[in-house]
Image (cartoon, rainbow, N blue to C red; front, side, top):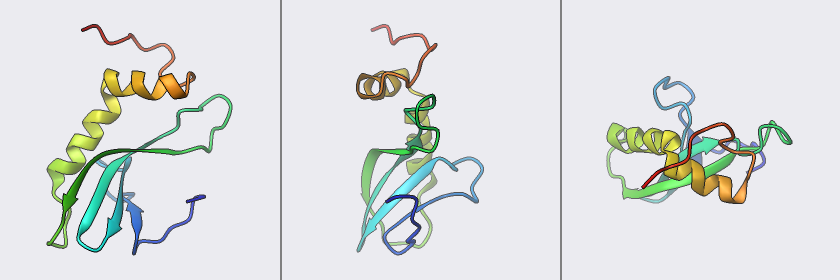
Length: 100
């Protein structure tokens, strides 16, 4: 995406303080939702990774808030952090690991 904005096909939620890290990709009535994070905070401060958390069919104008709430919960979930850190070791440094 290279930082491009094209609301017809993908967009964030910058005006929603509760869901500002959420992101959506659109194709007709199908939506893919997730969250944005920077898994390379030390080596590439501008890098943004979009982690997709779910898909939904959307027929109304507004996005269902529970979908965005779930994406924000995943952003803070230790299991998600560990999964991202497997590919990007800088991510989640200093956080306690998930104990099953």
